[in-house]
Structure formats: structure tokens, C-alpha cells
Length: 168
Image (cartoon, rainbow, N blue to C red; front, side, top):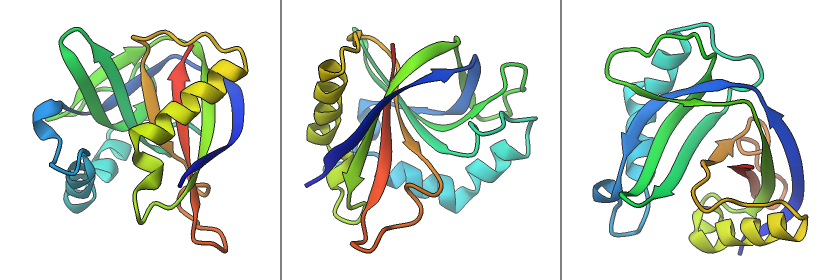
């Protein structure tokens, strides 16, 4: 079972998130978007985006799963953060996000059995944020940040850290 091992606050600059948008119709019977992530790696979408603009140093290096709940349902995007002035390549969409503070929770667990990707793990992050006094808006953008090396280099137990983040 995944656990929250660290909670912190970070400043985010103004960014343009560039990626592809998915919705409830794209969720598999297992409840996730893993097959869409597979398409991204298979089709080279991350490489295409990185070659499309100037990027945003120390931010656009990480793969991002951007999410928001609204009255019309869930939005789930896969992509990267880019500089606000970067162009959106054909076939991709974008979301402009203002400079803001974000709350971050490090979810420590296995990426092999999927325990770090569950709603239960995300809710552990929400509880940890609330325990730190962060005011969480129910309609705020949140995202999974697949940081290199926290997520890409497993520790001795084969576990990784997935950054769970939410705009404050």
C-alpha cells in the first residue's frame, strides 16, 4: 500500500500545459488511463512536444497527468508543462495555468502493482495537505508529476515516488 512520505509547498511559475485531453469514455475497466500513457510512449508524443518549443527549464522535464473535476465531468490530460509563449503543435491541446503556489505530497509505493495511482492514495495526499493547513479547492487543477529520478529510479525495495500536486 502506498504511503505519503513528505508534504511540501512549491511555487509554480505561469505555465502552458500542452498535451492531449481524455475523459470518462477513455477510462478502462481497471479504472485508469494506463493504455493512454502507453500510446504516448509508443507514438513518441513526449519527444514531439519537447522538440516543439523552448520548454520550461526544470519543469517541462517531467511527464504530467493533469486533472480537474467539474460539473461537466472529469478532465484528464497527459503532457508536459511548457513556457507560456510556446506554440501548441497540431494534434495537441493546451491549458494556461497562472503562477501559483501548489501543495505537493510524495506518494511512495510500487508502480508495478498500481498502488500509487489509486484514488485512495490521492485521498491520503489530500488528508496530508489538509493536516499541513493547505486550503484545497474542490475545483482546483491537480496533477501527477513523474519526476526523474524520484519516479524513474526505484529504490532497494523496488518502490518509487509519485508527486501528487494541487494548485492552491
